[in-house]
Length: 254
Image (tube, helix red, strand yellow):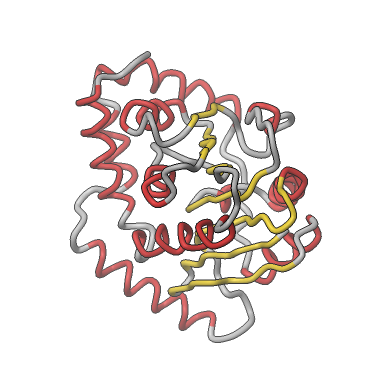
């Protein structure tokens, strides 16, 4: 099911454009995540070991390895289409792992030989239900060295604390301004991918997995709930380091 480089480049470029519709100040969020990882690994003699959760086509991994060229990045996702796009377009950015985050035994698939310095994610963990999210946080905490970090850039509403409604409105306004520069959304991107014969086998496998897994119920938890789950999971401290509307980068320190 290998892809040509030209095909991967075309679809990843379109992916990057359509994702700007959903992640407020996406590049800034990537930069903040890289800032955190660079900070917590500064001065360490061993190359940073980082897991990228829900890596998609390698967008975050590619940016991290440009900042930290010695880093060893293990990028995990369950989507065969996006994984193959990443392997082809960003082959040197990461070691790509086909696994479902939170499923039984998923951490064994990572094949780690030492404790993690960081686990990073962007716009992926909100798909997990509350129990699976707590279990995933606990598993990540056990995989990390003391002082290691979980860095999660995602849609995290403020909940009842603070001017939550106003914050959400500000984020929507910013997203609307971004959408003026992007003409393709998630649905139309996947519809277009479905017309590419080179991706037919990968799409068939994707549909097979979706039928087995079902839709699931995302957690959609507010920030305070994420922070409480992180503390329950064994992280010493946790809090936001960047936020625009409901778009947030949360850091938890082991």
